[in-house]
Every structure is written in C-alpha cells, then in structure tokens.
Length: 270
Image 1 (cartoon, rainbow, N blue to C red):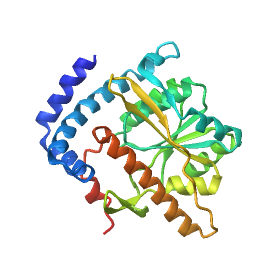
Image 2: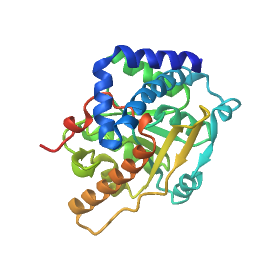
Image 3: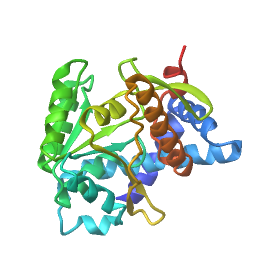
Image 4: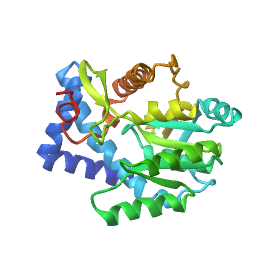
C-alpha cells in the first residue's frame, strides 16, 4: 500500500505544476538551500499520498493494530498532567504530519477527545469526515463565526476532556499578527483565546512520519502562557509563542507541512 502511495505522490508531483509551485514558494521561506527546497517539495507530495492512504483506512484502526504504526507517544506525561488539573486540555496542532491520525491515537489510548473542524465547502465531504471521526469515538465541533462553537468547546473543557484544534491558518481574517519565518503573518486567535478563557493547558501535539514509515506521536511541553491582566497584550504574546513553536517544528519537518496554496501571500498582514 505504501508503494502505491509512493507512485501516486510522484504522479501528483509531476502533473500538478500549480500545486508544486505553491509548495515550492512556501518551503522557500522555510529552507535556505534551493537544492534542499526542490528535494523537500517532491518528498512532501509522497508523504501527503501516504497521509491520504492512512486517512482512508482510519476506520480500520483498533487497539490491537495501531501500535504497529507508531513508535510510541513522546511527551504523554504532559497530556496526563493536564487531566490532573481538572480543566481538560487543548491539543494544539498544525497542518503538519497526520493530524487526523493523531485524534485516533488519542482515543485509542482512552482519552476523551473533541476535534474542532472547519466546515468544508463540499457538504458531502464534511459529512464523510465527521462520520469517519465518530467511528473512532471522536466528538466533532464544527467551527463557525458565532458563539455556539466557542460554548461547545468551553463545555468540553469544563468536563475535563481534550479539545484538539489546528493553529497555523487564520480562517476568518481576524487573526493576530506574528513573526513567522521572517514575515508578518496573521495567526488564528482561537488557541490563545480559548486557553485564556478556560485556563486549560495548551499542549502542542503532532503525529509525524518517521524514517521507517511509522508515526511518531510527539507532545511538546505546554506553552507557558502570559497572564498580566492585559488581555490584548497577553493574546498577542501567547499567539507569538505558538507561532514560534510551530516554526521550529515545521523547520524540522518541512516535507510534512501540507500547504498547497501561497500561504505567506494569503495570510500576510496587508
């Protein structure tokens, strides 16, 4: 199956020049060496094909077989510590590695998990993704620009559950300016704001493809949040800390940052 993914990834890389150009533009901000950028672009398409293959098989994962796909969970203690505080935990991730697989891994390890998702343009695709998650006992909170989704998130945290959210794309144009790979970019306000309102621990967590095609589950130490009483200033500082952490991880795994559009032009502060 992975051999087929290798072929599909190379085919996609060869026949989709626009996507290839977008990825090249993004990784040129991440990597300095043009030769390394070119190699990383091709690897990214192959890795993304592997991601898609595993995504379609997500409903087949069980406790007796998922261990064969992973090299363990580094930093699991950070997630466990958040439960001991009784305020749930915010699992912060990015479009880096296999974030969908990460939700399955967490539920198979017994964690109560809610996933925040954006509404897909295609309704049938959105419904398919929701059903796929629900098979794995993942609760889905669909993000919108109203208070309803925020209340659902805060209720889940109050129940001492995990809430996973992506934090590298500002979807509503209401983000906070941060420095990201040398550019002033809008980052979503949600992760820092939810942590501020709920006092839940903010735990950066990623599921990354390792050298032997096995996943590395990796939780970073919780982001230390500034709380001075000046909300606007605290949100700006904390969002920058999120961006800095994500920049570090993306630099280490540039060929797993799946962003097929001109990220820096779209999210740049005008």
